[in-house]
Amino acid sequence: MNRGLTLVELLIVLLIFSLGWFALLPRLDLTRATPDSWQTLNSHLTAIRQAAIESGVRQKISFAPGQDYFQWQDERLRLSAPVSRIMVNSQQALSGPSNFFIYPTGHMDEVLLVLSTGESMRSEPLSCLMIQSE
Image (cartoon, rainbow, N blue to C red):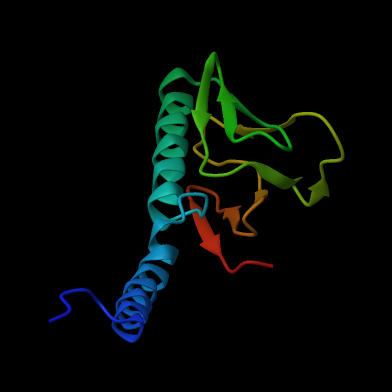
């Protein structure tokens, strides 16, 4: 009596395993921005807004194309993916870091960030919202 697997049985096992793997694979993509990453960015912007209100001094935030972080004071705060396009107050940032400000009144400049994943963030006066990929 043969105790091994036949070729057909082995192929069926491999097919079932590969179907499970391909069903799981999209959930393992760590380069994709998630709503949690936007919530993290939004919480940083809220804290910076609070600092602007409390100190009475406008706060400068810098984004640079190709970088996966933004700069505030001496801190580098991580983004989920590198920035591919930046627009501040409807002006396209061409090269180098782009700055936008949060004012002591609690308002901020209008900023649009497009990440290398294609996902976008557009600021509102007091928060940021995720919008559809372009």
